[in-house]
Structures are given as structure tokens and as C-alpha cells.
Image (cartoon, rainbow, N blue to C red):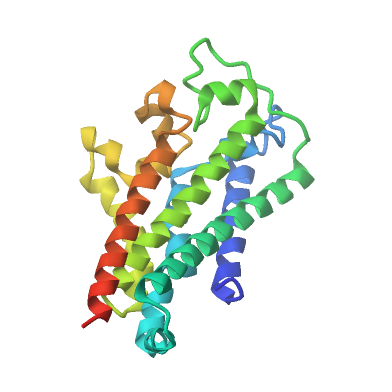
Length: 250
């Protein structure tokens, strides 16, 4: 899946989208440095790019295999249904994670050529709540570490959302339905899960720069996103295994 053109197209788009946010919003920011640039360039538009990436890059691979009859050929060689799907799960996770990782690393490479090196200069108020997420207090002390935490959260989110497409692929053999499902779920959660229900909305854990830091308690900012995505991943993986084993045994 990595050698497919769509993978590298999404890598390039991710790099360009982050770079666009940097140029449009922080071109005149004299305090901006390379350490902290990722924390400062996030936006709701960037958050919606993550489910698009997860869908396009790898979500529909299982549906495509089933539609082409490749799955039957693999199972006929003696590989169990459980083994086949576990391999699919891991490849889906890895490929989607690499797409976001490479895209953001490309953005950081571009930033390193135009932004001074070092940590962004900040003078936070006492509570630090105006600073960008995912952890404002960490940004005030070490913007570079906050960038790395942000990178980890976005990479994990991309991987888990791609598993939703894999889950859909066990139900329907339509690659395009599987591809659009992560984005559809994310956008739908913005409108359907409001108020106290925002805590379970995937968008809340994608928009790590503002929404996440305002919703999650301060003492949980470091790990809440990882716990959320782990639980969601378990649901998608177990559901995919059960449905795939049942359908392929018919």
C-alpha cells in the first residue's frame, strides 16, 4: 500500500496543508521557532485532514481484496481467517500511521528551512490556558516535546480511524464506502455529539490544539487521547474479527 500513488499524494497534501497554515497564520510571528511550530499551526481544517488520510491510504484495502477474490485465494493456501485479518489489521495501522508521520515530517523539514531553530519564545499567563495543546503547560516549558506529543497523537488517531474502514470492509465489498467512512464518522460526530457527549467524539481527540485541551481535565491531557484511541481500536478490531470470521465461514 505504501507504493501506491495515493499514499504519497496524501503525504504531500499533509505537508502542504500544515505549511499553508504556517504561512497564513504565523508569517509575521517573530517569536516562532522550529520547536513549537507543529503546536502552533494546527486548525480544525487540519484535524479533518486526518480521517481523510486514514480513509484514502489504507481503509479500503480489505474490501478491494474481497471484491477481487484475493481473500479466497489466500485462505485456500491454508492461512486461517484469524491470521489473515490480524495481518490486515497490522498493515492497515502501519501504512496509515506512516502517511501522517511522513506528511508531518515533511512539514517540519520545510519549516526548518524558513523558521529559526530553537524553542518558540513564550510568555504564558499563570494558568497557561491560552497556549496551544495538547498540553499547554508542556508547551510553555518545552515546545518541542509538545510537538512530539502532538505528532504521536495524530499518528495514532490516523491508525485507529483506518481500522473503521477495515471494519466496514468486512461488511461490504465496496472500497469507496470504506474510504469515506472515517471522514463521515468524524464530521457526523461534530454535529451529533455535542455538550456532554463531546467527550466521546473522535473529533475532540483530533483537534488537539484547542478543543482537546479545553475538554479534557488538565491532569489527563498527557494520556487521555491514547486511552480513547486504544479503546476505539479494540472495538474495531474485535468487531472486524468476529464479522470476518462469520462471513468467510458461510
